[in-house]
Amino acid sequence: MRAIYAARAARAYVAMQHRFHTPSGRYRRDGRVRIPGVPAHLWPFARALVATLDLAGIGDGLVDGIDFEAEISDRLEALEAYWDSDRLPPAYSSDVRGSRLGGDRYYDDNAWVGLALVQHARMYGDSGYLDRAEELFRFAQAGWAEHQRPNPGGVFWVEQGRGVGVKNHDRNTVSTAPNAQLGMHAAELQGRSPGTVGGAGAHEMYEWVLATLDASHETDTPGTGLFADKIRGDGTIDRTLWSYNQGSMVAVNVLLARDPAGAPTEYLARAEAIARKALRHFAGGYERQPPAFNAIFFRCLLLLHHATEDARLRDEIIDAIRGYVDRAWSQSRDRRDRFTFVNDGVTLLNQSAMVQLLALLAWEPSRYGLLA
Image (cartoon, rainbow, N blue to C red; front, side, top):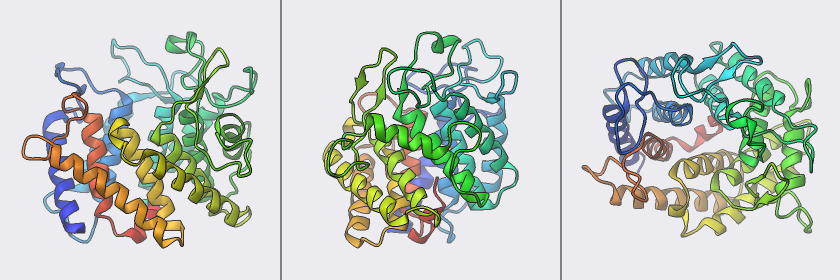
């Protein structure tokens, strides 16, 4: 089975590169209409970087004809076009610097980039990218909403005071939990405990999500989800359940369980409980979630797959991923290597999501602990 998924992942990757990659090393804007010269937003670009890392991680000679060192180097070089060091703390802009499309800085987008750099560090050694990941965690700390009411805390979705951030004051699970992940990964790789270091720490971010957006908060099993989307700027709660939010909280608990100075058994049990609830909730309904959200959800569950001793849960995770991916593959167009969802056309975001999942099904399971 690994060889089958590896071959499919390679085909989907080649299709992604053929359609979206440009001679400049950047990706073109995704969607039905190709806009000449307009680079992709940071969010789909970052997911394409992750797809490249996931395909490279298959190993065992299952993918031939791709120079992964060159491909990853190309992505990392192109990533620098989004780097904005003019505003402090520095971070990645939503669009290539100097473009006419603006340049808001989103805390969730920067978390995804930081986690990609963490995965690169785990796969290939630090090579300096861990320093950049830690810079991005400091950017998230600067977005901590200490004085926002109600429920002070949480990381804003977008940098405040300019652009979208003039009017949008949402504090999201997706801007807080992935940054908690980022801080915990960085601390673990540096041999530190993921406590508070200079402002809001990773553990404080995790606790804020539990206190404000956890449906189990007032039950007999707090900390076990499911997790609402956000607190809006007006203080109301958006209770939409997105798959990636559940995955991020699974991953945070797995990382906390890897800290020997903490409470490993308690946090692993929470991760398992959230995963079971989420698998039940989304069963039969993954197609109603954006593919990029599902890709994040499933990669976080694979991090749990590496940590849990529950063989049944491991099987449920793999079965859910295979079911989703196999359905998408059977319904894809153009020789079954280009993916469309809900009439989106072929987009970089959707295509990279499927490359990720196909590739991860081809990984040796013992390597899932490298994921971020």
